[in-house]
Length: 267
Image (cartoon, rainbow, N blue to C red):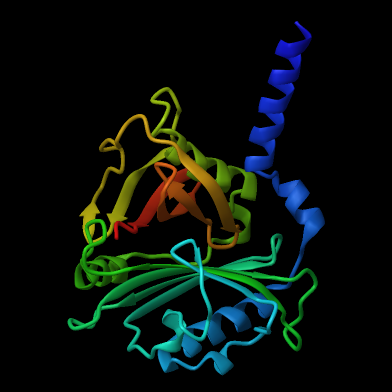
């Protein structure tokens, strides 16, 4: 009996650690929105120019990963200049983090990129300190990749700031994203589908219903979140089927899923 109780406690602890509560995260870090906006704007400018020095808050201690592998900023995608056809960023003041989606529709060198940037607690606009940058880079050969199509569909969507009185809590927003990912391994999970809802998966677009089925028996592990209550969004970086770098971003309106953007690295 003691062994069973211990096993249950360990399982609970593992689950809790895998999905930190918003309250626990809030106690660990906090930044103002202006600081995060300045950092994400400088990231977009740095990627467009291919000039690392344009990115505010980077120093020798900044950790950088590309497709979940440790890399260097000097040799990463950010060292290359691109014409960026679309960019959109969200900002998590509780976790001191920012998320950016980039679409580069160049026919010779197309990419769709998502990036989570984490700052040290209490960073300021005047003195930001980036602790970690995680970038997922997709291109030709990745799951349903088609940058011009992604650009066309993303440009048609409306991701405006949500009025304060209509915003969902970060717990509701994160739970909606988690429910979607949990569905891959547990078909009994209740996902808060919205109507209408549109899903942009690589370059494939499905609307007005996102509930069109997902693969079964697949664990989505190692989840990292960026939640923006003002925009009603959560981006989740995770390992698809325990291995492939994946980003799923969700827009939640009135507690229901409105948009889903996904990209998965296959190479």
